[in-house]
Image (cartoon, rainbow, N blue to C red; front, side, top):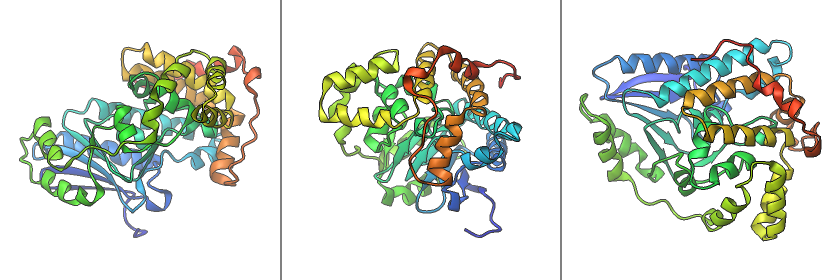
Length: 350
């Protein structure tokens, strides 16, 4: 990347308003300036009658976006908590805008799409995955929780697949993302350039049906995945409302997949898993994305004083030893501990 190039490239290509994430050295991880550039572009394109649709892509060869800039939050969180709070506030507002955008919003979810990358893609009207897609909400592995509206999106997956994804943080591929209703269409990566060119040739008056037709011409069925063979087990074992019951159900099942899933869950932050499950169940009962984002924002403010969050980021991003030493065991997570993530002493987002 040219060091002088903007971290978000905003341009017109025919009737398409393009937003190209361009922070390639950080795998296009989002920071506050990028969020503000995206917000400004959304306003510009929404008000431009010559723009029929918005297209969001990631520069570089590795992916759309690896999430939010958690290194910044790690470094500022304890001493300058307002910085993390402001990042989440502006990010969540953009997530809501994408969901309610008045023009087709197309996201090409090629390569790595994690955390905040899901937030700027899965809320769109047209979500495209490829054979290179690796999508995840891996937050329980860093002492955090699935945010950016994930507590609205994941409960809408069939059965308990969203609960499974939220608690395990497992990465999935194209067919699984479509099954989870986090994506709509599969287009092989070698067709993307032609797809974008065809989208750019749409007339300025094009609507969602026109975009559907262009994408359909280039799409095909995503290859099946081994995870699809375990959906019945996932639905059965993840149907409970406590983490302890989910772990017990997996242990009782005893299959290789159940054992693998159990080991994965035991590697996650117990506090994060309990918070995540509570938020996912609340999301299932919620009436709107904005309601979930408000709840998530309260929880993010609690994260700024959560030792497990700093330990998880240290292990994953700072020291990269991949061996977090969690501060709270599952049996020691109390309802009082979870109250810090339900604080209401802040202005609402909406």
